[in-house]
Amino acid sequence: MQNFRTIKGTHDLLPNELIIWRAVENFIHNIMQQNGYGEIRTPAFENTELFVRGIGTDTDIVTKEMYSWTDQGGNTLTLKPELTAPVARAYLQHQMGNQNPIHRLYYIDALFRRERPQKGRQRQFHQFGAEAIGSPNPEQDAEIIALAYNIYKKFNIQDMSVRLNSIGNAEIRPLYLETLRSSIKKIEMELCTTCQTRIEKNALRLFDCKNPHCQELLDQYAPFIYDSISDDDRNHFEMLTRILKEMEIPYFHDKKLVRGLDYYSHTTFEITSSVLGAQDALCGGGRYNGLIEQLGGKSTPAVGFAAGVERLILAINKQNNLSIPPDIYFIHLGDEATVTASKIANDLRLNCGKIVVMETLRRSLKAQMREAGRCGANTTIILGEKELAESKIIVKDMSTGNQNEVPISELSKFISSNS
Ligand code: AMP
Image (tube, rainbow, N blue to C red):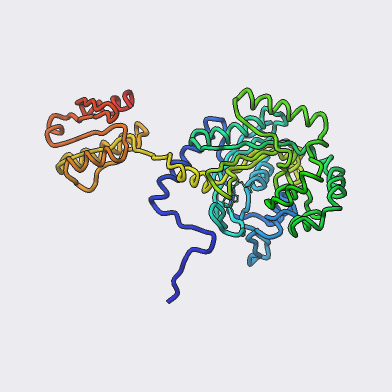
């Protein structure tokens, strides 16, 4: 009989891993909402044309990575390989621009790209990201960059680097590309074969090449797009860097950072961490003032970022710095106490929003105490038959070792004000 297995580049997530996934996702939902971003969910598949038009015909995603098919009704469909185009499509479809001049949206979702699987690179993966649609101003770019950076900061990701650049508005691109092509003409044959094919098709992407020899040649011969941007665009970039400095977000102006997707204009940025190894990109983003118009709407400025969930979790696991201890470990002894403890644990989860882990192995008091210490809970609560008879419960602060006997009826209040 055939043994069925996950498809190459896809993974099952098992309960142990999902503990960290849930914690990371909850955290992202909270921080996005604290920053005024509202969640959006779009379907798993869209019309192929949305991605072709949105991402660009000559990009790697569109030329070789999309999972596309024609359905029984003859529609050409694609599993979403990125989320900015679907969000822009939803923004237009629901006429969100007419309701409010600015929309701040975020997502956490699964994406599909037929890339070569390796550590940190899968065919089904997940991204979280944010899109701010409506403001053309650099403070909006700064808000987006700070949002991404602060998420990684909160997870204490080490050795981060924020690279930043401006590729200016779309109007300067044809002239710049012409200059770029003619400057590298003489060294064309020394570039790798991928770069050689990119020269005509998508010359900006030469700068994304990982081959050190190509990079050396580009350093020597290629002009940077940043040096061709307009005065207005330079002012935009300077104001953005001023705000980032004020926010104490360290960045490096990398004139070679152009990003692979066609829809970017002006600001581009990427956050990397050496903790990740070869696939070191945590997230990437930038401004895409032309996309909404390209999809049939009126010209609308927008900026956003997309970040890999697997990469964030990889970085967290490598550093071993995220243990998500429960707030409360609940020790109980005896059948009657177990019934009451189950109800109390449920109430604490619902009413106090606490992470409560309750003993269900009926271990000895000593073994339960050991487990409470091992799992790193801030508070341990103990309900035995004696406490139950007196309608009291023991609350132990695990950091100080202090114990209080609290009437069961006042436990929620006590927990809310003391932990
Ligand atoms: P992109 O949409 O290509 O700009 O990617 C944004 C982020 O998504 C990257 O910085 C990575 O963290 C993550 N990412 C992109 N492609 C993959 C993949 N195939 N597998 C896992 N994570 C990915």
